[in-house]
Length: 205
Image 1: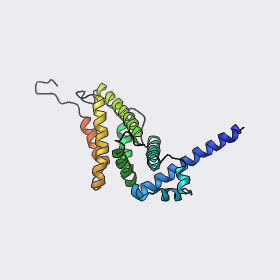
Image 2: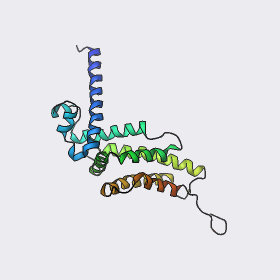
Image 3: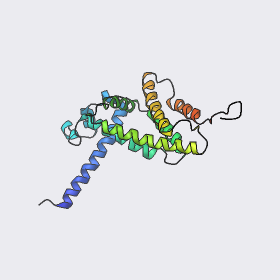
């Protein structure tokens, strides 16, 4: 009969090794990009064979998906704010950091397209990620509308989807033309949204 304590210890070591793999792989992808970060290079970075590396993941696509999940965990801990007024500044910090890791941006953009296929390993990840982000954005927009800081002509859920589209679209533009500043451009969108509706000449909105 297996020793439960030994089994738990092996499981904990497996989880720790998997986390180490994801952290190191994220560094390699940030530096080399998706094309340059082969399974062999990622395996070498953590001192494993290719077969040993893939032992922790179902496939190369699953590995890349989990790398993005790890990136989101780090962003949520280190960059995204959780307070009512932190969505704008938190997103700005994330976008600013993304401009320093073009390989991760390229991986995200490539995988998000591939994940449109319901059978792709990243499909559920991108669906869940989008829902979670939009819920956070919508809550922030709703608070702004209730406080009279935002025009309430557009539903917060729609504004949230537009903000997600803007953030993802700016990354694609930046990959083609890195000369412009993504964070400043996104900040301009927030500034535009923050302007209350101007009254008409009759004094009515």
